[in-house]
Every structure is written in structure tokens, then in C-alpha cells.
Image (tube, rainbow, N blue to C red):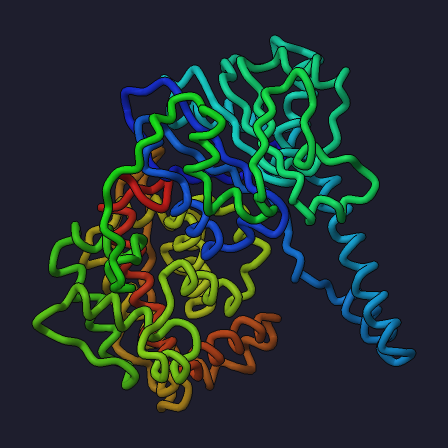
Length: 485
């Protein structure tokens, strides 16, 4: 199986269109779901006549510092404060150089992986527009370079290619060759972009015009202005399919209503599903449910359990669901797996599998394909699994008597694609008394992670609630993206 360099998410789509707009982020962007949700929100609604895809690649982040780098910087600090700054600057320069090299590599796979994804999910799409920002522009240029060598390698028709603050050097001769790979190659550049000066060994396309590209100067634009002002960029460059009209929309100040990953989904679910989530949240002493407004209250209290509970209490609000998922990813050490999750439901599936792995090392129903298992599973069966999970996440479960708790009956056969899924009977067990056995099986780390979850304020209520939201998204949500309009 060939390696996958990109993960995808769909911001919105029209089932009758044959065109897809494809966005590729740059360095220090798209590194977590909070940032991805921000990128999605900045795509203008005036583009909702086409399919909008975001292709996420491992661009890394300026603040991502490895253990080796920390040791080098710490060692330099023992010599002189100036040596610390020099070591940090040198390390970040090397880090960016590695990301730049990776951009060239993943760019060569862009059109192949995009074609495969569209063929599987949107086979009626025949035309694409490519938009790349910063190192994302480098990714796009790398794809065009490969295409220029073999025009028959891609079945898709490329209409517009929009390069925003592209962190790549392209000569006039090369631009001539690349210009023939698309209907139009647009270079949106700004002479005020000081960030691209840090790419010292190259004359970046994002700071000057190159013929025969269509060059559009974005006067006084900084490097980070392109995404927040994307509507203006698309209008000034006359981007294909963009009608230039911003749909009227009142900006809501309520963080609950603004949390599109939760509010838009949970409006559509049956009350019994919402009741399951509320049941688990109510086990936390940190929250208070307003029975007169169950949906609003449930989302508000989930947000409050995210992040630092005391900080949330002082400021009077919690964190959005995207940030909450990122928090759980870090808690369960799943940062390396996050890049492969393009859609929210995929990250939720990763978390669900991990928390059940921690709680039930003897086996559970979600060990291989959580989404497929949940699709085939009746609601009462799934929620009995979540109840058993919640039981094992409480601190009391670590200190109670060793007598076995009542068993959770979940044994039945469920039909899924490709055959029958057999779910074995799961029996409760005493985590504390089983510790020596766990240590013998070399999974003490998993036991300690579960114990740490029980100690975290509100986590024993939050994790089962996320599992309920996952069930709702599988059955009533859009599986391929942040939102579906």
C-alpha cells in the first residue's frame, strides 16, 4: 500500500457541480483540528456553488520542538544567553528547511492522491481549481512541475491555480512551461511580505511578479493576511467560479451557537441520544445542566470541561469542540496519528478506539473499525458499551472491592459490509487488582493513561460524552468534513 501524504476534509459541496476548489495550507498551519476549523471558516460562503476540499499535509509547526532540539538549546543556554538565541534560530531554520523539502515531496503526490480521492467520493468531478498559500504554494508548484513533464499523468482539467504568498522560486523560463499545465496560473504577491525574506536562499514568488503568470499585487498584504482576507483575494484575482458576493449572515456571539462541529450536528439527533450525553456529563460536579435548554446546556458544559476547568470558570466560557478534540489527542498521545484524520468523525473514531483500548485491554467492539462497527450497531447496544467505559474511567473503579461488577451484555451478531461482525461479551474487572498482570503484559502505560484520565477534572464525564457525539456524527452527520451546507 503506497503511503498517503494528504488527508482531506470537505467544507461544503453541491452534488450537481463538476468542479472542486482545492486548498493547500502552508507552514505552521493545519497542524491540529483547531487550526483546521479556522481555515475552513475562512473559506467564503460565496464559493458554495462548488465542492470545496482542504488537503492537509504534514507541514509541521514553528513551535514543534523535538527532544533533540530541546537538548541542544538547553546545552547552549549553559554557555551564554546569546548562544541560546543562536541555537534556537539555527534549529528553527533547519526545521523550516525540512518542511520545505517535504513540501516538494508531497507536491509530487498531490494530483495522484487528489484524483484517487475524487474518484472515490465525487466521481462526477472533472475540473479542479488549486489554491496554495506559502509552502502550500510550493506544494502546488511541485505538482505542476511533475505534470509539465507528463501531461497525460492527470485526468483532471486544471482551471485556475492561485498561488498566495508562494514560498518558492520560479524562473521566467520555468513559469512559461508551468503556465501550460492550467487554464490560468495566478500569482498573488505582496512586496510588503517580510516573512518570505526569511527564505533567504530563494527569491520567493510571493514577493514579486513573474511572467507569463497572471500577477496580482496585494498591496500592503502581510504573509498572514491571505487566509483572513480570502474573499478579497478571490475577488481581486477574479478566481474561477467566484461570484464575489458575500452571503448575508449575522455573526453570532454565543460560543455554543458558533460551535458548528457540535451545534449543527446535535440539532438533528433524537432526544434519546442527547439524553445519553447529558447523563454522562451530569456525573461531573463541574457542570450544571439546564433541563429547559438541554441542547444549548449540553454543548456549553462540554465546552466548559475542555481545557482548564478553573480558567474556564473564571472567564465564563469553555473552548470550542475542535480545541477540545486537540486537547484529548494530546492527553492520549495521539499527535502522530492526527495528521491522517481529515474529517472530524475520523479523529473521533481514533479517540474512541484509544479510550476503549485503555479501558478494555482484553478486547472490545471498536478495536479495528470504529465507524463501521457503530454504523451497524443498535443505539442501546452502543450506549451500553459507553456506560461500561464510563464505569472504568472513574476514580472509584480503581479502589473498589475486587469482586467482579455486573456484566454488560453486548453479545450479538451485527451485519456489516463484507460479512458479520461478532461482538464478544465484555465483563467488568478491577483495574487496581489487575495491575501486576498488566505490568506483566507490558501495558502499564495504558493503565496509567487511564488512571490519569480518571484524575483529570471532568474527564470521566467528558470522554463518554465525546463517544456519544461520535455515535451522533456517524448516524446523522457529514462524515467527510467540518460542516455540510
